[in-house]
Length: 186
Image (cartoon, rainbow, N blue to C red):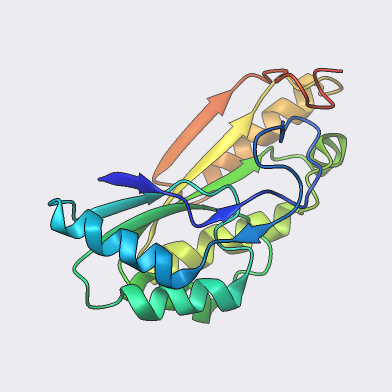
């Protein structure tokens, strides 16, 4: 496995995120240049990609074109994804094109805490995305933050319960880390 980036930046404003490197403007690399790079990666003997973009699945047109072009190249891939906007067709297309695993920043199992984090996603959207990817046969990994400023013991318990009720293949619980440049740091 080797990593590649195809999109840069994030238009969202999650409280815990720092965007000093790629900024808040979402940009896509030229697909032809991306596939030239993937071709080179294949010639070097790699058969799996880690798509390290924070928001690879944000632009469904870009994602669909990627899936069409990577199909048949004998290259598996994994990526990070937002939970918003995912539907059965997208999940199935991702699987058919070689997607092996999706990592989701679910962050919490409590809607009030999601709002504290300024996540701009709901628990239901997270649950829906997990089920859609799982149903499509894609492994699902999830990141959670526990001990966020403003959380309660009850909301942390909600997070553990939420994580354990979902069909997740991998779960990562982390404490909030105040990255320089983030609102949490300030």
